[in-house]
Length: 175
Image (tube, rainbow, N blue to C red; front, side, top):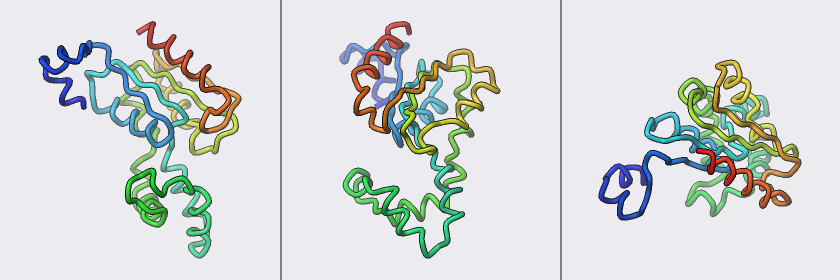
């Protein structure tokens, strides 16, 4: 999509102001939005909603005896089948164990610290989606445009979706 918007005629046809592009992602999409922001200087910023930190889960799974990992993964990733194409819980767990450290959200902090970031977390969420290490890293880097907010809700923001939407729209209006 970004490559399409890099074509001035496409951006004009779609009525897109390419100087005001923001990516938004929730959970795994929050990790992806942060990674995209780190790699694309043309983006104004990102909204990260309960961004998943795969490295957190890798550390957790390395502490679980191998015989119990599959059972724990079935619980932790019960929403994976069907949502990530043909990826299975077993494949996700194996990839997480092999590559989770490389996917540490804090590795992106230096690349995004100067950018516009609106970050939402949920108080009733799992620790791997609360971005505590990322927020701490961004604070250490004195990120001037970080707006982080924790909402009293669950991972899906089920009972706070309208408040979440309003907060995002107000933040976007200021950009």
